[in-house]
Image 1: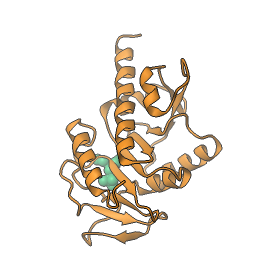
Image 2: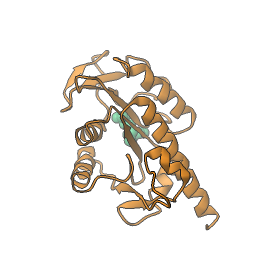
Image 3: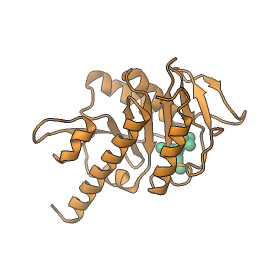
Image 4: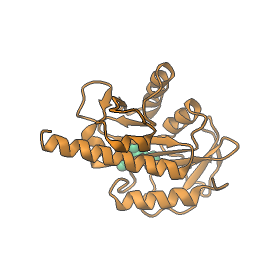
Length: 205
Ligand SMILES: CSCCC(=O)C(=O)COP(=O)(O)O
Ligand SMILES: [Zn+2]
């Protein structure tokens, strides 16, 4: 992993913007440094046009350590990144986007999880069982983001998720991984699975 991962985050955001997953200011990306602090997109930045100045480096407890612009504020959803880094010490990157498909599938269940089809692609999310029966956790979307983060922490402490990804209803998907490259792969695979679920729904399969 780079000692300064901001270029990785910029490249990922550019790709996700082009895919329509980070339109306008939607979504936030972060990557951890060896000292435990992490660079995260500053709040309200256009995700298709990020530069190295559009980030904030924060400590594991959310204190701002470095800010290229005095006006930069950490992403409004920093508490979710903090929670995931604290729950999963091996995680070094955390990516959150707002695709149409993530929003659609978040409504396809009335429970607090989404059953995933037993696709070969699940191997790309670390699921290697035959005919896997796994679910993606789904959380309510509260205006107070720390409340979402607290529910994530409470639930995952009791029962770790089957896959390194979660959905927030009517909001988007978040993945975490041990490197920015893996987080990008996880997100692409999660989004592929969402497209499959939406297509199956349309075809009544
Ligand atoms: C139009 S996006 C609304 C806020 C949000 O959900 C998001 O992902 C971006 O917030 P940030 O503070 O990270 O810019
Ligand atoms: Zn969001």
